[in-house]
Image (cartoon, rainbow, N blue to C red; front, side):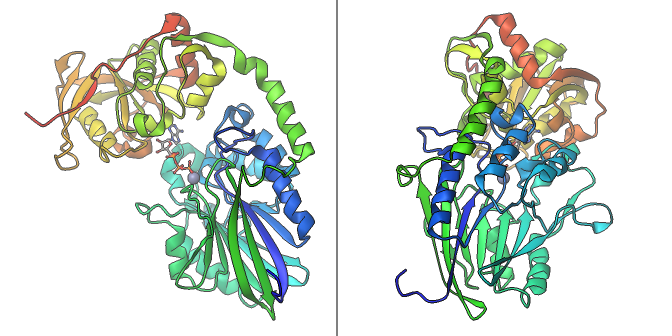
Length: 484
Ligand code: ATP
Ligand code: ZN
């Protein structure tokens, strides 16, 4: 901006990269290009900060095969100044997260994650002095983490209210700094309580809120009633956010935001050192991922909108694999745990791990018919809207009356072809996330584990190997219909 007075600071930001390390035609730029964009802006203005708002280290085999370490190595070379842990950062357990944070060459910040004795497990904020301007930056992490990851991953931790923590930090920073930046993996999902929108409404004095979690694309940012500029850069390295800030006499006098996408960055060179790390990691994983385990006669459907709202052939194949390995009467697994589709033709190990990246175990529980019914009700509580809890089943058929009230939608349930008996006890195979009460399957949480059958991805691989050529279909296990 010509003629703008004051010190010019550039803030670069990413969020919800979900380990999208490589460039793709779907608009994902990959780590090397993102780093190249950072380099470009840093060459134009040395007074530049680069920040990530969480959900970086989990989501593809690039990350999961080494429990996040490859992303840490890449991010160390990308030129970040700090990051905030998102809910997916906990997917390898909190001990692993703390270990990875120790391997980062920049700080991981979060003010509201606490452990024993209400002690914070990360530093809440840092103050960076750039060209004489004091910038206070603090982190916040969504409290949804407690039910969006396996309970064991957050055992002993609690997430304090993000808004009151933000107030505490702002009070502490306001006299010590010229600029206050919040970095929150909170998001703007209207169905959620814990949002960036709420924090900026309840807490005055935040100049910029760098958001993540809801994968929101804010082209020019949003300005709240309190004057906070909220920015968010979509997902999967599809955008780098750029915020220009001018500071004069200890205050921000102008701020403006934009996003840079793949097309706009076409002429910017990728960072060579980051490209090298990414290529070396991919090379080391090539052989294991390329191993063929069988083939599929059709596309195996794992698209988010489908697998979280309806029976799909991939859901059926996976639920059948649970029965095959455990011999249980019924199987139920959450659609939200199925993270990708598999195309027709040869199926590789890499494709299976991409579908099932959470490292889940298979367990059986001896449950009552009444609790199976309650579980199905929980799974379809948002139907016809998509929800992670949506059940993919085997050995069970049922109907959903979408016009009935919540909790009374499921009817005509059969188990092995016979009507469900509320009082009977059935052996149910599921994943350890749901067995522990994840996705609000609290009715499962009370049962002791009756049996353990190894890793979920390995069971699917074994089942495909056994079938040779998988050809699952949609059989009408889950259908819509009014109550008789
Ligand atoms: P983002 O991916 O940006 O953080 P998010 O975490 O809110 O968004 P989802 O992609 O909806 O969201 O992931 C949450 C869902 O993932 C849960 O509702 C659940 O269905 C599934 N999930 C999370 N952890 C596990 C796990 N360990 N095992 C099985 N499923 C899981
Ligand atoms: Zn998230």
